[in-house]
Amino acid sequence: MLLMVIKILLISILAGIFGSILGLGGGIIITPVLTLMFGIDIKYAIGASIVSVIATSSGAAVAYVRDKITNIRIGMFLEIATTIGAITGAFISGFVNPKYLYVVFGVLLLYSTLAMLKKKGQELPSDIIPHPMAVKLRLNGDYHDKALNKDISYNVAGVYGGFGMMYVAGVISGLLGIGSGIFKVMAMDLFMKLPLKVSSATSNFMIGVTAAASAGVYLIRGDIDPKIAAPVALGVLIGATIGTKIMQNLKSKTIRMIFIPVLAYVSIQMIVKGFGM
Image 1 (spheres, one colour):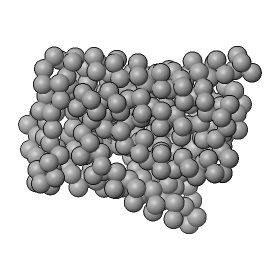
Image 2: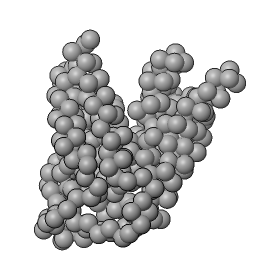
Image 3: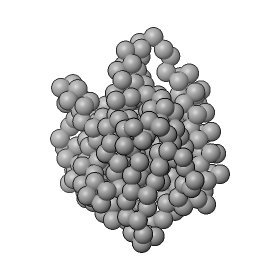
Image 4: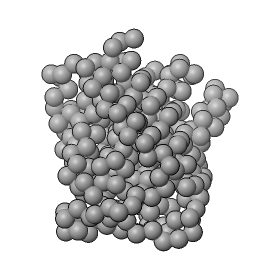
């Protein structure tokens, strides 16, 4: 039992590093590892995954907010769409066959993978005209990029498109019970034209808010096992703290090259699951 706890702790550290760099939370690694490698019941794996997302967000948010990479105004604005979407998804979950949704969203992610691939050499967005709503809500921002060693000012475009995509992300989360961090990063990068570091840091901030809102439900249902969740939370928190230091010293195009294969993998997995293969 002790050996299993140590293994879970080490894997969770890796998940925390990975999740904090890409803004996805650690669940994308934690859930499949716990079920496939350790044979843990899926409901406890998902419960631990929710805890890992909160831990990733908590560990990463402090550093990213302190260094002003997180755009809190964008995060709170988009969280409105995600929350409404999650409620919608939970409401219609009994009327829609999930397998069709897996295929639709999988294809959407695959398209986004190709769109990101076209931008693989781009370090920062250029010549972005600020959206009138972004100006009105004061969403444009700036941060100091440690990898480039200079201050970066950025404008926000596609506010309505980003807001709509965040609603879709919430619906997916509510309908399929999966994390929507990958959709959050994609929406901010492709629709709102944010620097990838800002997208990742803001996603880390947002996923913690979303996960914290649903964690109570999992706890009441008894889906969070302390023997599993405790080493996961500790490991992910350690990993997220390390990951924030790594992320800030990486160039955006390096992060994008890590993100693209993850996006492709998740999209293919969703399509395969949709077809029941």
